[in-house]
Length: 595
Image (cartoon, rainbow, N blue to C red; front, side, top):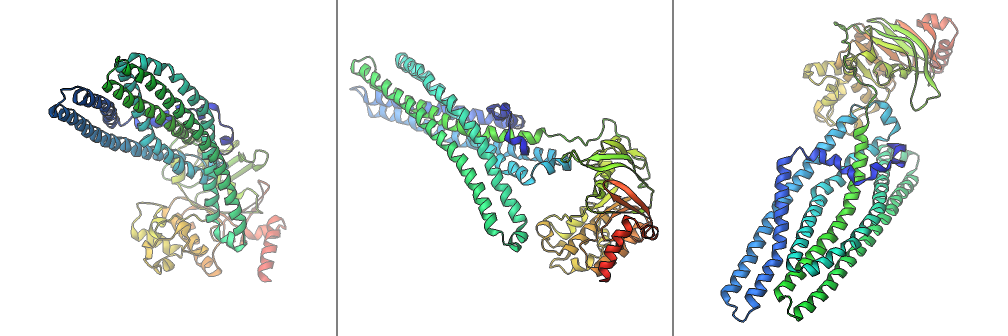
């Protein structure tokens, strides 16, 4: 994805990509069989109409002894065909639509299921908004293809092939001439199809860019308006839209030319054949009913193959969409449980250790985020990690949660190397409060119980009280059932952070990771939350990352990092007296507060 989408291998742009859809659709064989049956029946009924007109003309009007009874019988036959055609078409539509909707629903779930297994690295290298576009816009294209285009293509192919057979039965000479001209039709299909396939892929990429631009701008609307960048963002969006339109124009122009060429060739051939047929009728070698049936069937065959060429463009678009979806399906996480994971010991203790760990982020392969770092954190110990920005503090949490594996050394939890354990078992023993608060567009209750979904209401209230969140939640319009908005937009920054802290506390895990957990709180809230955290830290291992050194004075140990290494270690008092990096940071902060 991302940069990958600019250089797609040829196989990702072939119509064979639709095999992905078939893999999911083939689970519903009964519905497919029903759709196929009614598809064939509707095509057969369509082809029976010319025969019905042949009967009407030859038996009803084509002889001197035509009777009202003969005419009535012929028209009754036509009415019966119409009823069968209507019933078969409606049932075909129902089953094909059901298959399309069900298949795409399953495919969306499968893609999301795979995305949820991928590590943070994947979402750093690929824009989530672009991924969301694939799950919406691309699957919508596939939904149209499966629920409509494929059915139309198959129906018209069946009608076209069946019509050609019937044409041979009516007049082998004229039908032979028609078949000889078919390569003239399929040659342009192949030529134009390759161009349209490439343009379809580019068009979908540009549409994804539009969606990404919208998502990014709307998500940062306060910043956009605060800095008066509305015109710039409108211009950026207009550029993305125009790029999408330019590619789309090339695509539909090519399809228009292809449609013109195919239809002109098909119907031009039919006109020439009819000319020859009219000569045979005049010479008495063919009846009026036969030429009428041939004309009607020829029109059906021409229309069928003309429709196939139009649908072929949709199939190519669907192929491009399927290729983009399959890219998501093919992604595999390198962070996975081994074949035989080592179970973590019971009871859980919360001992965390880094042993000669060196780590580089995949997106920054020349910059060591952590360099030969060793750190052992005992059960029940509270360790604060401080240092300037970029020192590698948050990387420790990324490694502890096994979002990444170190290139050298090992990280252990309760004595077990994280690479030997199941990531789910590791994360079950960790409660995490990230630096950037993440809330969901749900109620306060559901955001809190995200830490432990089976928590009781009493447990939820206790966690909220411990994090100093109960009071403001109770004052919301519907209390704990109040909808918090997208990303918790209805709350202040401090309130959002307190809910995140309560969520972590509700998890009640033996290891608590706090990344700047009080950075968004005012002085009063910070004091209350700090008191609650200090009570809770007494029963679990806690690692605290903080820039505000006032919040880490009570830690058992303070680790000072710089350049991915531990440069100092001790208590607040010993480090302040050492006149090192910690003392410099403390002097700057406390002097600023005093001022």
